[in-house]
Image 1 (cartoon, rainbow, N blue to C red):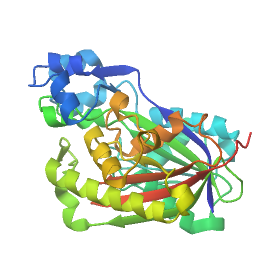
Image 2 (cartoon, rainbow, N blue to C red; image 1 turned 90 degrees about the vertical axis):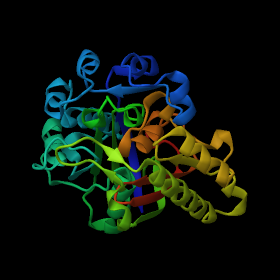
Image 3 (tube, rainbow, N blue to C red; image 1 turned 180 degrees about the horizontal axis):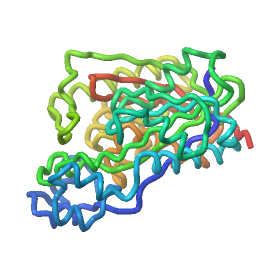
Image 4 (cartoon, rainbow, N blue to C red; image 1 turned 90 degrees about the horizontal axis):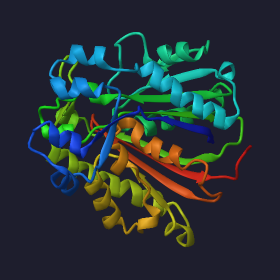
Length: 331
């Protein structure tokens, strides 16, 4: 089985709260935002004065206005994951990265992150938009003992760089975050992946799109209906794998797309409020890094024996689920 030895996260310091968005004069305010997506604030790698002045109308300028690269934010999350696991960077035998908005077509984002960390090992990208966290761990779990001793997975998501802040529907959603996971099949970890799944419906491939030289766009209503239906099915499938006496306590961590969508899945599946973990209200839609940051932010307080269903969906259309069992601290 694939074990998770450490999780890490990084949120850039610049805050986009609802008052900031209202001041952009794009037809929105706190009440409107909270009623639709339930998000109070988000983080961004962009300079706030730049956003006020330009509303990010030029994607080339956004690259210059960014205060961090993906390699830098990914490395910060990775450093936390490694320190939590008690593993040195030089012991990592493979780096896998991916997400929704890479800095470069080539080299692989994983190579840039490995370079930032001073790691000398093979590195490649494996991504499926917002389902990347689940996809990476699912496919690595299929390789089993063929994997190196330690594998580092990194998801740098600085998506605000490709958001048009003249258009309110996407401006209110996204926040930047990076997440990292250190895994091994040879060493016991803080958590064990007891089941994983990955799937796709390519007929909806163009419903969520980031063009090579354009802004993010999506068919919002259609995508939300798909996400609610698929996430509900995946959570119930994970719950069905547990004995009845444990199923009711299964934690739900969904793709942090918007809070109303997450709550809809929780209601459909009868998830108690204390079994629904999220951070979208404070950090926004963090694309593929969202679900991983929820777990990372709770890493030090998750009790041994806790069982968690991580359910993520993304462009493609794609989806993934992970059923995790948390163990006693390994340190």
